[in-house]
Length: 261
Length: 358
Image (cartoon, rainbow over all chains, first blue to last red; front, side, top):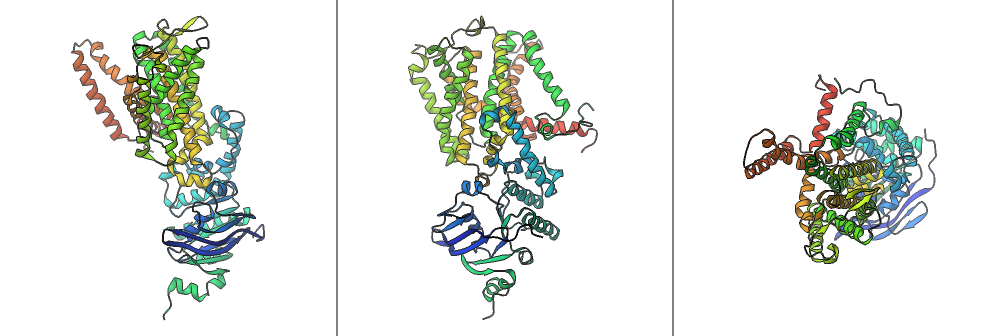
């Protein structure tokens, strides 16, 4: 069961519009994410879901609207601001550091938490080494949680797809985020891997209280995991509400399945 | 049989993160250092020191410099020769303006000038990548080459256009200049190279090295984790150029004794680049292997007929050695495109599991 009940709004997207030249990727969309909940963003291909995540963590700058994150209103987020204030994400088509080991990939998630400067790093002695080992200890806990102990020294590029997805989740967890954005965490996985991944997502949410926003196409996963669902279509907000309401919404059914006219 | 880690248990993360977690590797390193610090100076002839070991160390340092930039941070630079030149000329100016300060201090300071210039020419790296960045650093190469030729202040208005190394002492022993013995110069060089290699290995294993590799492997993901691309890339340029600059200063002061602009031409840049590629991108040990491959091997090949007592015309030896080296480079790159360092890694892995295949 959840350690922490769903709380106040932690992030609000307000009237955001994003255009690429003449293409409107997101048109005047507003929704919010509450603390400790699992929020799903669904919609057909090209609906603007990934663009929305990119807006939230500052990779895209929307032309209109604003993001209210932890009570602070931002015209647009910035990648550094997002990362340093507790937003982490995974990518649809894995964006791991292929030449680095699993351990280094996870350690990379701790970069912003490392304080010792150039001088101590050059000596790698005393405080710098203590800091490195303290972070290693935290990373090992994540390795343990995700059951990837056997591959910690393997370069990520050599791992199969399912494990890479898991390592990417681990890297995001290593940042100890308050808000975790997952872009299709189960794309291309078999049933067993999907079950594993669902378990990890639920455990992260329940044990650590991490707020999760996820994009996913597997409707059974979305309906089972999420507390509330945003539906986007052609960049517009189609529906917003709990799974049982959204799944019966005629507009949603039309967008997904098409309706005989 | 000799290379087994059976029974060597790691009980702390510190032990697991050591550069050489396996005991045999530590013994090997100790042996190499023993040979380098004791046997080579005692038994090495001055020909051996002057033509092989001293240049090898100089190029190893420059290769480590470029490897930090190219192998770790993924930024391609063709300005290595010029950055070495900046270090050399800076050291020359410092040594002639402040003759009372020790030459070793000047050598270490001269790297800072190279670092500054390196950062300046590293600025375009925020916007351009790969071959395009290489072209931008090529501009640095040609511009600085021009400076070394055309600014007489840099070579103290010497009519020959060359910089000549003055004699400098430490504790009554000549370190540089015509009176310095090869053994002294070799030992000073070796100490500096060992210390700087140790520092480089510390840097690349901490968060600084990781953020360089993050930028190299996937810059977008690195940015979303909170690594700021420009400071990270510029730090890589600064550290890399510092190493190259010190290597340049050492090259003139502890090896050549005098230098003209062609010593720091585009050829030098390419030579160091080849050492990085042959040795292995992103490997400090590989930097030494690459420098040995490109510098020591040709010298050995040229000396080979004489050692065997065969008389061949000097020109023929020169040509044959070029052909052999070229062929060897191709062979290495076909067998292992990741360079000597990866070959060595594979060999070690095979040794660990021998006689079983895995």
